[in-house]
Image (tube, rainbow, N blue to C red; front, top):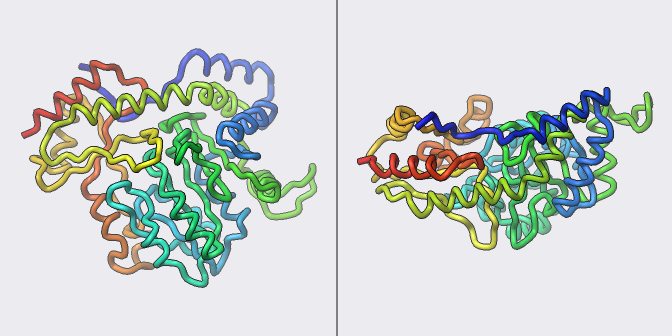
Length: 364
């Protein structure tokens, strides 16, 4: 069996043709392809507006700025996520306040979240981690009670649904990443969704140098624009997204049915959600025969890729550790020491899936 990577971009001739068309057009910056991508992505998410941007971190930063988050403010963020969820807050001059996560869904814990609200709290970033939506109803209820802005970090959850509605339209903003390993990709790129006209207008200023018309700048802004080449890939990928997500769910279902080794916990899907499995994350308990490090080496020797998402909870990262209690988020810390991501990308075939399960089930 050839090496099976933990992630693999699903690209083909359609994407090559789309990029070639842009190159031949001579429009290498932001043009009509970006406009079309924004419109189609907003329609897909069920929002009124979508603003294309150059990456997912910039999407979070722009959303926070559009929500008027700045110095002296606090923003609640889950401790178990990629660091951009918190660093985007810090870039604004605000303080990320770390909230522990639910140990089964791995998403922000609503009760813990409410306990962290202070008079300085102005917003919440809820992450749909690994493709599973957080408890939107509970989180929105808390945001409404405390007049907090809700920003969805949907970087890993393109097409995921909560009670039949796609993510990206539940909060004031939805932030997406199209990085090369995501459920749909543009290489580098992102999108911010919103259904409020004023936020849309602010986002367009923030992402284009604060420019309201050519060479007229009405606020401080950034060069966060997406190129037409990235948008061209995104348009093709968006058409394939439902197929990609269906394949990811089928791959996950195969694992669920066939992984039978003691001490390996498969992902638990919350009621009322449609998980899109950006990652298939198992948890190794004390009963598992190998340490995580040894298990990774065992898989590697058998030609199977794996990854740890994430080995250090954000509140324990050196850049934040001194500003927080020794361990305010024990669930996040426990998860960081026990999770492992297995290949689940849509290019896996049935033989590879069977081989992975057979290999893992031989662990003793």
